[in-house]
Image (cartoon, rainbow, N blue to C red):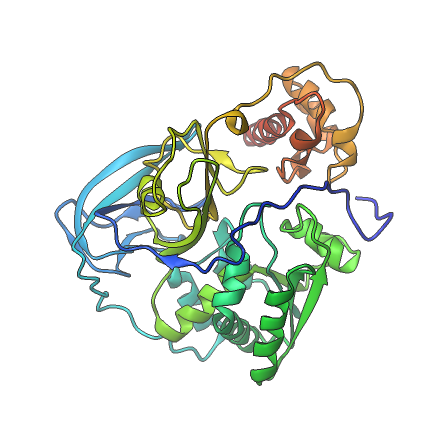
Length: 426
């Protein structure tokens, strides 16, 4: 990766974050939840409950030897353990729990008592907290961490979950930073946030000034540009250095940090998710805090339902999100948004022949050649994909967005990564 300036290549995307100023609303428990097993890539958990079992909120319902446990987000009776298709070939088991509205908390929940790094990581593993799409405890196991960076930037132009976390869970964020720095012996933490979020920056400054700690906490303002959420892009934006040069730094999502802060105060594991619900057919778009496992249909019903029949439902955002197979897919721990469309915004334009304009190259943060990657994929040429560095793709969707010929370049890049992984495994 060449460093010719402080900024990597990015594109300009009009912000549609209209829900940034809307407070999150806690939705009531649905009639049933379906909690997926596994919840993340590499998770080897298996259900440890059977149909007919009564479970309580926060109780373990699935676990694996080297995996984080999966917890029930409600109290009720396990009605079924079935299989559901999430998207494409992604199929997972779902533990279906019929809620009883008693909101009964598990008797096994206890406030963590921590005196060493080992016990801290052990408790963190039990919490079930993810950092993005990977277990938080695995990141914190790394030795020699001297700096902690909390990124409070959004994944997508339409998503407001990180902003609402900063505004509503500020003290949890500070508590999370404190417990991490204390047990990992980190002297300095920095919160990275977009410079146009003035209210959130003021809120952070206010809480930082009122929290006395043995470690320092600073705020780093970054330019509001698309793909800032990606670790590699954010590191370069902040420092002009590559991720490989940051072996002594820890990077955590702001939501993950807040959940860590809350867990070590209450002992309640990760069982809910803040989601931005938006799209041109959502009656009342809003930020919703929903139990893990709530069907998307129930979340949307809480938001007033559909105004028209949906043509496309996307998890996470319009740039890099994936299409859901149906609205019976449940809320997962890594879900940040539900976007539902009907009409021209949901219709993919027919791709035309590549005009070799190089717009996809100029917009790629990783300095890749998406149009060449597409040709190599179509030719089933894995050797060329390696030469092109296709495995470095961060699947941000910038190439597809900016392509005047409307080529499905991100899909080709995603397929390229699958081809390379499959080739390495053989």
